Image (cartoon, rainbow, N blue to C red; front, side, top):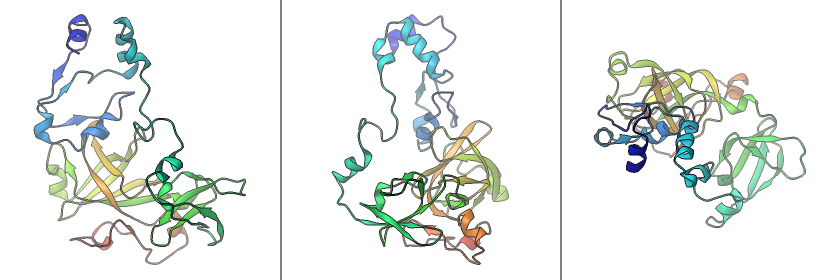
Length: 281
């Protein structure tokens, strides 16, 4: 990197040390960077170099080509399950986990549509390959206790959409937590939970234990427990929290259930765990 820096010293970019306690959203092609930095400590950020801070991936490849750094140009992208290479995901997991057969069940009529080798092989929102069925079905819920995978018949089925979630204690990058959130107990911002997804407008509600309720302005597809909700405001990455609870799906609300259940990761309830203390479900 040092030799490249010298060779390209006349270029309109420089290696800069970050003395700021905040991080910015990634440039085009590097949008995954803020999903990595949102859990980095402030002390580490003060000592971190961001040599490619303002550059797109295409421009970096152009620099590499001009300097005959062909190994950079030929390097494969890191996509999906990083570093395991191109392989069948189900077969890969079953090398390490014992199969736990269960049923594919329609969320609309509770009809058993087929069998699977383990609920852990599926991600919310993905297409479920069910033997004997020609039309596509999509994973909307997983019941780890029974081993069932609930599916819906369309990629835009309302069972895939939710507008409410609760995180664990949030790691704030610049302020702990932001002053506006402390003052008003609520704050408008944006969030995402997957690499390269569009930012979603939302309202954060701060709880006494440092967790937050996140209410999306518009229902979001395929929210899942265990993912990280990463928060942004004005192009700045504020921090993140692990998704531990989910509000009801749009399908549940459409069916008019008076007090729908809330999906929870883990069985213990901490301070403020009741949905009643957050936004109304």
